[in-house]
Length: 222
Length: 102
Image (cartoon, rainbow over all chains, first blue to last red; front, side, top):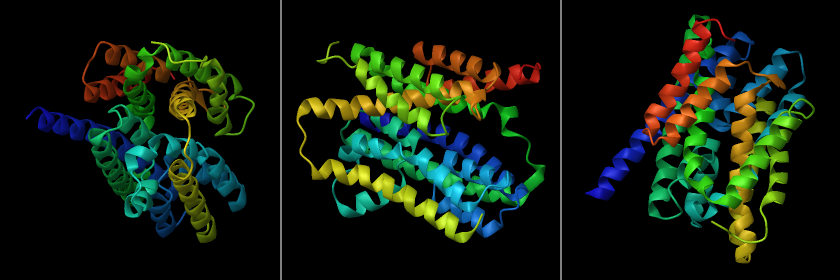
């Protein structure tokens, strides 16, 4: 019963995250449409790229008169962080091919954090797939809604969803921050990323955060 | 946006995601390297939290967002349920914006 309660709780939490993702998806659909991206392309982007930051960046580059090549390069740069994320959650996704092939597509920042907050066992695996599938579904449904509703959609900033994501990630990371080496690395990473963000292209400041590993120290201490 | 652009972005993103998953199965790594994979993910996630809290297009995001995140973080620290943390953070930022804070 206890594990059933936990599963229900995990699904509820994943749903909360998915709703926020859906709201941002609506704004993506509306924004892309306003920027002149045709409906099939907007929908295909959400379905196939499935990475909010890169999608917004690519559309912004195009809207500002940039070339498609620049849009793709910027989006890919922003998504490079998913490689080390893959290293970190590979055990949870498993080594069966169907799981890897589909699991790779669902490798979203929030899914990584959501699953890692639940260890590395069966519960983490369920959390990965539950949150991955829910987030993908809401992101795509939101996109379609945004395209259809178009300019009737208010700026999502009004609802404060831009604060919901960092707060949610932070809440998921808090338990791991009880370890002092994780705390040192995390703090260093955060400072480096913010300090470099005025100078570096989007995506690079977050990658520069890896330099925070220099604060890891020699051994695990608690 | 064009079809080739969307498809390249999709394929590139997918390859990056798959590469990380496959690399881990490929190479046997000693425990102390494994620890860096773990710490590295936390470093990237916290860097992401920091950047998305404070910056917008390379500049300062305004106070409403970081204050909302702060209130959400305090709620999480006080063990408020996750769903409420998300709502509290978004609600705080929304109210601050309603009050005229950018």
